[in-house]
Image (tube, rainbow, N blue to C red; front, side, top):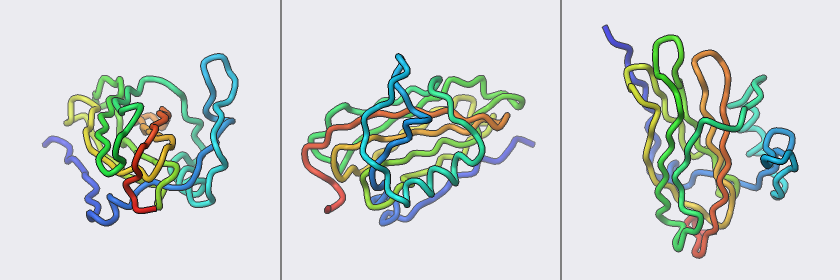
Length: 162
């Protein structure tokens, strides 16, 4: 019998209000040359959500492709596609993809649960962004490792009413 696919269903209000605060994880996120990215101080809520999702793991940059516009004319509707390079076999697959936003009312935007039944580790959605900020994607692998990707999005008109 094939594995079941677990999908977290958020209410519209929870999904729309998703994301939060400000972000600096300079020990974990750096440019290719090793210098830290310039970001603002994260809120305590963001730190708590990030710490809860990451646990004792050290996320590694790479293997995540994020298709997200560099500039969003309107933050009410920002499309996003996330693909993780994974064989999606029983022994090696993505178990979850977490989407975080650094300057919205809530830090945790969404979590997508996956299994080898999915065959590919790819999800599409849309999100609201309150203002210019980083969007962080975390991918949890079956072996316990974690991947990370950070994308900066310039927002012309905010979408969260703040």
